[in-house]
Length: 423
Image 1: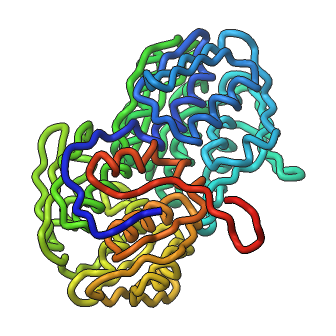
Image 2: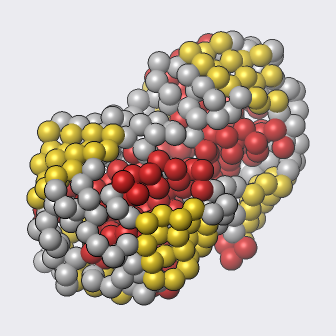
Image 3: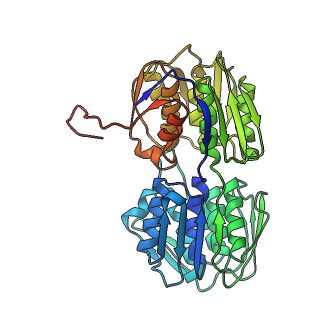
């Protein structure tokens, strides 16, 4: 439950990056001894990977209060991850590349995750096949095997983060040089490359559209601290602007936030960037803007939903073009329950700004839609009840505690629905 109308003020610290964590933890399979990963967010996807790796035979020690996980994969692990836990998260497909590289075979249940449109894995399979793997799908299981991976040039038809990561993981043990052309440039791709290099791999070019991986036989364990979460930072920036507050957000890499900062500034919000912090403050309605989501360094699709909440009360009419996922406007129907005026045609949302939103019962359909509803609730007059907070917990670490520290009125409650059930 969120009681809106309170400006956020104060200082808050961003957690480690979800998207980096879910790539780095499967990568620990490639090491012959223990890896220590620090700055891990305590979120559902990290907890799922802890349980998945443990069930596969890794020795996992997780200390949530220290944000640290130690993963020891020195003992042989099972190469089949077909149990239910795997189906509950999208990034479980990274296990495929890592297991294939180390053991030469793998069976992985097709991944789940948020329903935000088609998320094909054809580019993953194209890359793995180019390296010499045989990959097929049977009864919802991805099965891959090889008698030895060999370096190759892989051209990605789209700059897919998932495919880039999976090919990187598979190629670190491949014989010779692998070149990934039209590679994704996202910060968590660079973080994975840095992690692999700390393990003894040879990965060059991460952050550009060409990544080169020189295969090596053995990788060793390492200690590594993952980057701050760009999307959490962006969500908090938007929440500060939405409530017309004044917030300093610490533990950020400001260059990762440039597209978000630029759009907020265009809307009339004040954004002061430091090396490892950003201050966001505003005292008036934002101006209307046009936004098009693009791969990094463009405006991130994961921030489209939270910023669409802010635009509901902007002066004038805003337009959002969603170029990454075709079904990522599910939050719009919930905004309209709160008094927003939004129309959607295919991948384009037209938002006619209103003076205010009013609290209402709403339902989160996915992770970032849930974050968007929190932003909307913070802006709204009265109380907003957000159902399905399990989605929010997949990617935000105790978001309500961070917002409370800034002066928000927000709490988790058990509510009995019309059928007498608790959710």
